[in-house]
Amino acid sequence: MAIRDDQTLRGRCLCGSVMFEVTGPPQIVAHCHCDDCQRLTGAGHSTGAMYSVSRFKLIGTIREHRLTSNAGNTVTRGFCPGCGSPIFGRNSGMEGYITISLGTFDDSSMFEPAVVIFARNRRPWDAMDDSLPTFESQPTWRPERGA
Ligand SMILES: [Zn+2]
Ligand SMILES: [Zn+2]
Image (cartoon, rainbow, N blue to C red; front, side, top):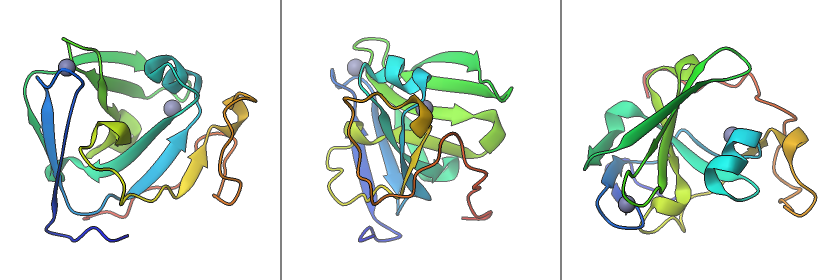
């Protein structure tokens, strides 16, 4: 991945009242086909870049929606209260990390998705790159600590 460790990447919601900055490359970029992501995005999947929260800076006021996942974790979705753009998600099972919606970056062209998750929920019309490692649900993968 061609993102430098000291590189600052910026993004914003549709109306521009919520902005953010992150520094460096993400832990991982994943496509998620879970039912919640389909409802949240209104599309066939979400694509998110996972970062340590210490690398993330929010500018503006976010609204949060919380729910309990099938695995029993608290999932928090952060979105712009003005335009509804989904900015990030957090999961209590992955404390200290935040997953940022890739489409909200000003330039997301250098990110490389590494994995497809919740493939069992994928709709037939949402074709995906067959060459990517694909998991039927949430893999047991965990980010390296201390990143
Ligand atoms: Zn907005
Ligand atoms: Zn999902």
